[in-house]
Image (tube, rainbow, N blue to C red; front, side, top):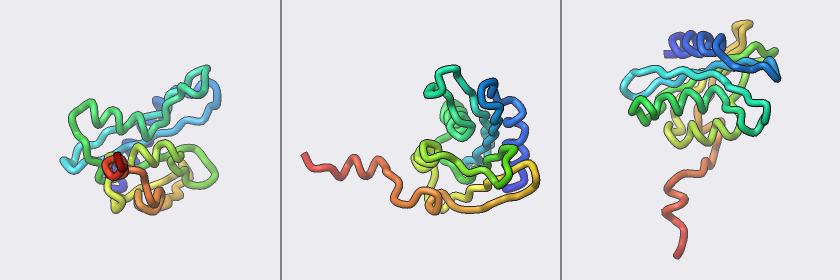
Length: 134
């Protein structure tokens, strides 16, 4: 799983639209059905409208009809293996269990491994919304 995800993430990174920062990122998710969906970061002159690679991959997955992330890979040309930002961690937590592996890599071959739960302990979930008092 790790090698396939990283290969798909690297291919997606090559398609990144990053004319402002020059910081291309690729990501891939694998679902419980075995399908892999990739995404790249897509920048905008108004930086707040930029979409990260991990969220692009998840949105691609949902549009295809899958809803469960079983594993994630993210890659960029960084000194150390790149990690998903906080917003992406929350989106990944919406669709994956805390046990789902996350492979964080760079183009130099460094790979860090963690789980979604390790990256975002105490993630906010739909269950939290159900628990509010009326």
